[in-house]
Amino acid sequence: MGELFGGGWTFAAVGPRANEDWRLDASAVMRLRAKDPRGWKAVNFAPERSTSGLSSTLEPFLPYAADELGAALFEITSESAAQLLVALRGEWFQAANIPEFENSKEGLFRAAREILARFGPEPACWTNRSAARGRPDADLLNAEAEFECLTGYTTDCGLVVASESEIGVFWAFFED
Image (cartoon, rainbow, N blue to C red; front, side):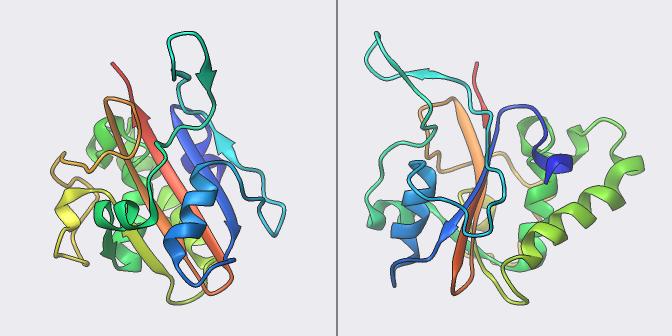
């Protein structure tokens, strides 16, 4: 996971599926209220943000209700999810902006597929990248830069992946 989420403003965490509604489980992971059932270390390199002008929070996501969260995320295929995991590494979430991308492409995709394999052969995947709205097989490697932001930062982009027993949240942030 370090190859994709080893630096920059990123977030990667997994929690158990405890509810029939995946959105409740995703929200628990986003709010840092879930522990990885396999003990994998979570990554939370989100920029610190002020919540009241006096205090700050380590929770990068805004507190969305389950139905709001579902409305901001679009279902995608595993292949689109792998592309997105790689693209999150680049500036503005574009693989074309990853330094030396052609030299590291194979390793980045190997790392992305390793992460997705944790969720079984056919995981359910969602993103806030608008290019996936109505297009589950969208090419997200260098997709248009429009997002349904889920944080208080200037821009964010990410992926929610679910199996029957686990749910993962993988995100990157941009703050002016």
